[in-house]
Each structure stands twice: as C-alpha cells, then as structure tokens.
Length: 329
Image 1 (cartoon, rainbow, N blue to C red):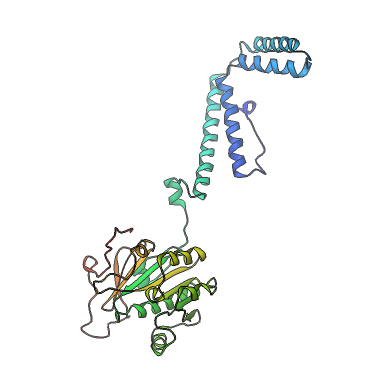
Image 2 (image 1 turned 180 degrees about the horizontal axis):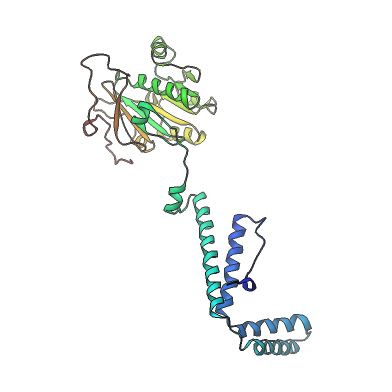
C-alpha cells in the first residue's frame, strides 16, 4: 500500500546523526497523529488556523469568530472522512520501521559514548589485537592494543631473561620497544643477555632511567611497548604507573616486579587489578593468568638446558600468583 500522502520527508542529506534522530522523531509523531487524531478534529484545527492566518482579523472578537467559523467549516468537510484500514496498517508499519531506525542510531551513540550496547552490536564490533604466534600465543593469547602486563619472580628465576625475550619478540613483529633497565643499568650482565637472547635489535632500545622522574622527563611516544625493570627499584607507585598509561594511551606497559619469599610480588595489590596479564617466573617456567588466555605455562628457554630441568606442570598445578585480594580476572 502506498502511503506517500501521509509521509513526512525532511532532507537528511546534510544532517548530523543527532539531527537525523530528531527528524525521525518528528516523522513518527506526524504519522502517529494521522491515525490517532480523527480527520474531523484535524479539519477543525486546520480550518480555524487557516481562517485566522488568511483573513488576519485585527480585534479579538473578530479573531474568535473567524477561528470558530474556520474550525466549523473544516469539521464539516472532514466529518465523514476516515482512513481505510489498510492505510492505517501501512502507516503503523512505517512508524515501526522508523522507530527501529531511531533505536539503532541511539544505540550507536550510546556505544560511542561508553554507554549501553546491545549484544548483537558487541558481537559485531571489531577490536584491535596483537596476533601473537608460537609460544607467546599459547602463553598469553592475542592481547588487545594496548595491554598491560606484570612479570615477577624470585631473584635469578629468569624474569629479566623472559622479559628481554618478550621485548625482542614484540620489537621483531609489532613495533618499537623501549626497555628501561632501572635495576641492572648499562652493565656487562645486561650486555650478555642481549647477546644471548636478542635476535633482532633494530627495533629495541634500552635506557638506564632509575626513577619515575627520569622516565617522565623523556618522550616515550615513539614506542609501542615500554618495559620497566623493575618497578620496585624505580620506586614507581600505582598512581604513577597509571599516569604513564594516561599520558601514553597507545603504549603497552610491561612491568617487572620483585617477589617476596612467600611467592607474591612486592607492592600494592592494585598493580594486579590494573593489568591484563600476570606472568609468574619460577624455576625457568613462565606461567600466566590473564584476560586473553586460560592459565598456561611455557619454558623461559626454548629447550631445557639440563636433563633434570623442571617439567611444565598441568594447568591445575602450575605455579602462579594467587591474589590475596579478590581477583579481577
């Protein structure tokens, strides 16, 4: 059924999304009035208004007379006019279509503003991730861009070696990396680790910054990933780390932390709640718990160096940090 006679058609070509929503609401109201207000009443209102504006009476009494006569004439002309049932149904269908469009637009605005989002929209959303492969895919999964990671373990457990290997992998595949060696500095031991475990140094830079103040005095924006080894030595607080994330929202921060004898990392539990991945290093084995992958483990070294090296345990028995506070994962 054609309903052109009942269409309200504003020009949407140059409208913004908000203007389009407003125009759609007006169109819905216009069509609703067509089926909710009797034609005779519309004729009375229209006739009165037409008489008032066309004849332009000057005094109040004449205005009231013209309004009454015009309204009566409009009522008389349309008193027996009624929309056919099929046109009423066609208008209702058009109203429903317009209402659906309004809902889609308003949901889209809510999504862009951090508000509500439908499950369908969530499933259709695309998110940027780092497509890890090999052992890092098995260990961590595919993290979003950017992500935050904590690596910790007891002294000589292999946490710095794991971190340098990870930095080399990220630099070789995904972007520039800055490794801040706060604790070790530029030293023979750092040099040996780079010689032994860095395959491609073209995208990997090192810095000896020992404090938060030294870090923020430098521009980190050229980098996609920043390692801080370690947070404890640099005495960086939760608030300072969060400020770095705020100042550089495109950078993934991988922070190395010292461990207590009891197996927990040294520092506030807020560090754990504010990150995406926690990697525990114990006896040459890296175990992660995080948002992008089920708990998993891998060797820090590609192959066990000794016959009696510790075996990677099953998931249920894997060494992993258990929060004292409630886990956010």
